Length: 244
Ligand code: ZN
Image 1 (cartoon, rainbow, N blue to C red):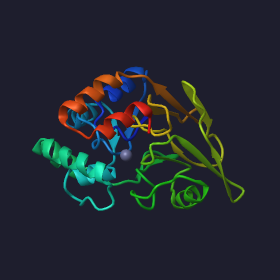
Image 2 (cartoon, rainbow, N blue to C red):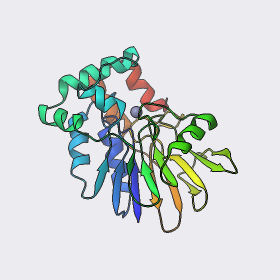
Image 3 (cartoon, rainbow, N blue to C red):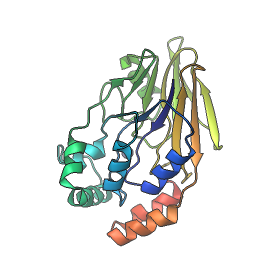
Image 4 (tube, protein in one colour):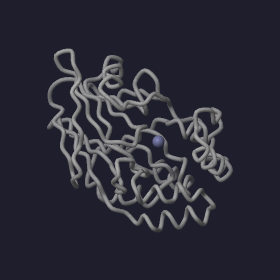
């Protein structure tokens, strides 16, 4: 099986379209949450993702707040502003669809599961080896895919310890997940925060036991212009091009 892995789209339609255009041939798309928040195209992104032929989608923290099933506690003032804008601009149908998204973790097959933050708590972040060790202990499949941090990373549990594999800045970075237990973040489609503004997405080949993390350029100026026109905060507009 070949899975397309997309996470943290954050209402960035141009980044999503570039990602889908560069992904050639996959059996199922896995969407790891945070479809909305920060960006100016929440409805178009939802409609595009819903229309994918074979897709499994779980919710993220911005999806919960944007659809009104959780309050903004824990969001900084910029995220609060953007999510209030999102709530006001979602169609009633899309808001109801977002509110009904399942919570991770979701088992995909015998070897793969997905979550937004961690398998034990969808809102918890995995940044370092210690976080990864906790997450790996609660994973029910050998390869667990996660998002939420907007940073591509892979951690392997082996001999009781955790080893981190940090992706290099290349067009495509491969991680051999053929042996051991892994937790892998393929990065953020709509708002990367590793200093590289290009959309990040992943490809899992279960036959080869390989995860490939790709980067693709998109029309970031068009995305920024839409955000300005929507009246979204300038800092959110600027950080997009900085990859921060
Ligand atoms: Zn996010």
